[in-house]
Amino acid sequence: MKKYILMIFSAILLFNLAQAKDFAEEVNLDKESIKQSVNQELKDLSNVLTKEITDANTPFKDDRVRLMCSGWPICKEWVKIKFLQDSNFKVTDAEVERWISKWEDKTATWEYKFYVQTEEKGQTKAYLFTRGIDGLSYNEPILIKKFPGHPVPYKPSEKIAYPEEYMSSWPGMPRWKYRGYGTKVTSSQYIYKYDEQGNALWERRLYVKVWYWFSIKYFYFRAYQTKADAFYNYEEPVEINTFPSPAF
Image (cartoon, rainbow, N blue to C red; front, side, top):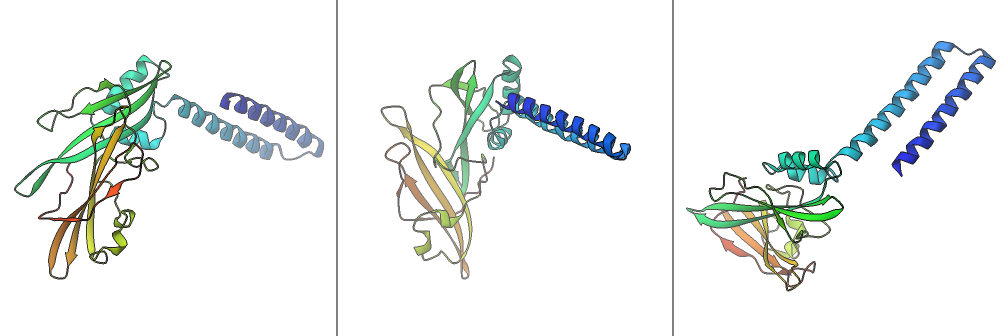
């Protein structure tokens, strides 16, 4: 469709240029002014064509997906190789699991899994990226049966770590007794199980650091799904002894 629109646009532009030339000859307009106008319109057309070609040849559906892939080591290189093998290859979606795997001396150890969905050779496929046991190396992606979707369907993740979180987005927060104090917030999100149809059920936790008068308190809020893409069940906050800063 874009191709035909551009052809029509080009034809209209050329027609207008011809009309402008005829008109200039009739009224004896300044030829240099006409030349500048023609060059500018050609430049604008070139910019449009360049953008269309670039958009058509990118291996990512949109900027969010591209930025998510950029945040996971080896993802961009893997996409580059796939794209060289198949010019129609495209990453259409991405999502991340992040959770605290253990605590050591009040320090949280975070774990991550990264998912991408692709279109390749006329098929929709899904891949899982993981880290090595040491937490420093990165494994080659493996093909999985199904992309797990998003913990919040209408708000897919935009970052792998250090997500932008707001307490006001968590139900019940306006009634929380510490709501008005200075805070720092981060979150985890992970698949705690799959249903019988293989759909992912997500659990989310919101971690909050609160400056309360002359002391600091730490809490987490927990929410979980019982059906895929369904509303979450929210629990009352639990006080903990530290704040788990993400480190990826």
